Amino acid sequence: MRAAWYERTGPAREVLVVGEMPAPEPGPRQVRVALKTSGVNPSDVKARAGSRPMLASRIIPQSDGGGVIERVGSGVPGDRVGQRVWVWNGQWKRPLGTCAQFITVPVEQAPPMPDLLTFEEAACLGIPALTAYRALASDGGVQDKTVLVAGGAGAVGHYAVQMAKLMGAKKVITTVSTPAKADHARAAGADEIITYRTENVAERIKALTHGHGVDRVIEVDLAGNAGLYPAIMARDGVIAAYGSSSQEIKLLFSPLILTGAAIRFFIVYELAPKVRAEAIEQLTRWINEGRLRHAIGARYSLDRTADAHEAVERGTHIGNVIVTI
Image 1 (cartoon, rainbow, N blue to C red):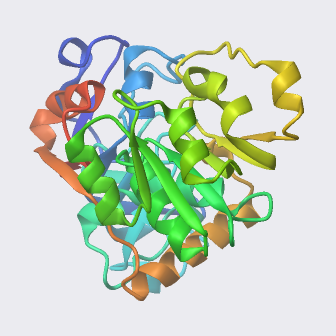
Image 2 (cartoon, helix red, strand yellow):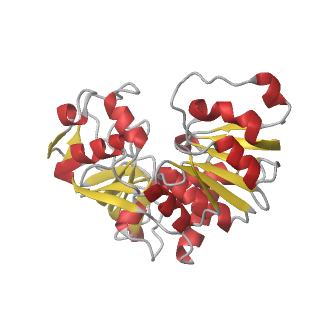
């Protein structure tokens, strides 16, 4: 099969190779998926750059994808062959990810694709959409709450804005960096948009919430935004943190404790089975109803996987970056 891989970590153009290698065979309770697309996420490019140790001497990157089951292992019903599926955790704690013609995964990691979903859209669900859902659904949800989505034009943020509205949020506020990203977040359904490079975020949130603050923050950069929380959190609000620009986070204890705020740490790769099953069921329902929009920012061929990684690192595109297989 053709695949992209790296045998050492480093800059994309220096370490990524595209070539031929043997296709994996499905083991018990596994399926082999003929991939059509592979999603490139920030965590994928960070891993290739060296953010975590390599699990094997050769790594095929990327965890998200869409394709068709073309072979099954023992214990998997044969009627799953030919089924359109999307893949999650393709390269989490496993060396061979989705940036290849084939992948083998446990059967539960290849749920059926909703009929309305394209293969490109399927490659957006595993990390971005499941992250957005978990951030909103945990700790009582966001019904009748005021929600702040940090980075509402990002892959997770774009889904989070939409899902917050679908889950009954009273008001959805988001932060963006440019007018183009503001337009993107507005089209997703954001009620209020703050351009953080030119506006005082804390003052704008106070004004937009009439001093109440926000009940839930969907946080892409916990370290970078931690200084805002004493000024923007409503009493007993929740900060759902899925990302941080630094391992060390400075929190102002005395003013923050007065808000009663809680921080929910989570990583989408390690969702509990029941939590993930609930999220997949809800995503499937929304997609089947035509209520969830997907943003494809750019498409790159397998031969241009290095370009795709560099585009994600630069933040060149608004929307998800997809490698077509």
